[in-house]
Image 1 (cartoon, rainbow, N blue to C red):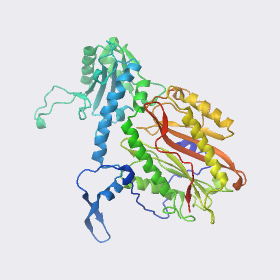
Image 2: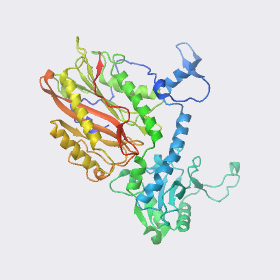
Image 3: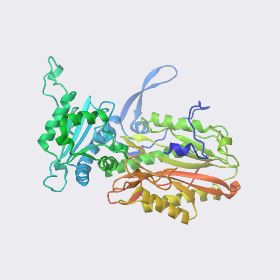
Image 4: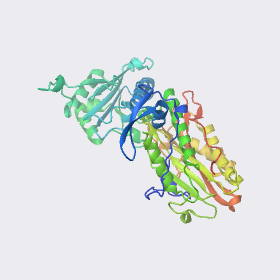
Length: 502
């Protein structure tokens, strides 16, 4: 997803502000490829309302899977919880050792959470509790023994254990007449004193803090929290502060094989939805507007209990017409080239996809050869990117290699790919920006690591003979995975044929 690019290209970006002329509702049954297990019996009861009255209607397991293609909220949360514990056990020990940090402190307050929050907390934890200070301690660093999950203590000063993920330390102050004999929670400056006691107990050599001028994911320590922590710890310990910088970035970026398998199902679901949207089941040439497709996507996502992390967009290109002539919300006509930029969010994971379609003219059975060639040029750029992305290389190095190969092949295009995962525009190296094709200082200098994901986002502009040499832009975006072995692969596949609206 590239909002800035969309606003400056021939593709018509749609705000979705205009009310749709017609409503198109359809239901995609994806149980066959999702295979999400459901709790409870084979049948459940949901409320349905007809024009006369409200009644209880029994629903089959297959129908429930269509409504909730990835399972219930409870099932998804249980899956996320398993991922969380395994991710922290798998990645934190090696990353702390890699970046030379033996005590990593991450304080945050309610509604001012560190960007790392979603990567280190359970799915039931929606916000920091008053103040929560999360601490990772590498107990094996001093002895320089190999990093292992057993070396890492995970301590939460405030909040809960989140199902055993954290060792929660609470106040010892009893609350008079407390319900159930509850103890007081850690509060205010007293929390900093508890942190100081922990620091003095562990005697760390390097205290990692989330502060960076380059990476947002590494800059979550607010000025107030830094001030309170510094005043409490004093010069002896603050002199051991070190901006962790790469540590949060790599932890956010790294994903498990179990997450990769789930991501493939998410991607397959997106493909099913884009193919449905770009078909005669949704589009009536000469009647359907681009904004209706925008809101079709938003509604379909909501109806399935899913979410999206950005407003979808639909673009239209037309023979002999400029973007200004096409307008902001055109009626889709035969002969148009259609483009979508869409995504879904499930289990705190995000997809980002751009697909293209052609609306057939009467008598046509396929898109003109020139449009097929335009898509092939974009495919070639995807191939270049997949060849060049590998662990240890920076985003800027990859960008230069891809663009060199693009120019050698005589392709006119731009590359602006980004990491994805627990954030849509994720942690890790940028491979260009639409307006920075010479490299991105700072963020483009970060290196690719194993077990991270990318959205391969790019465009190729090609003169189409059947359109009188008019340039047509094929913008594509497909999610890919770099495995733990360092090998890149598509999360599902890439589009090498235009979807056809008949």
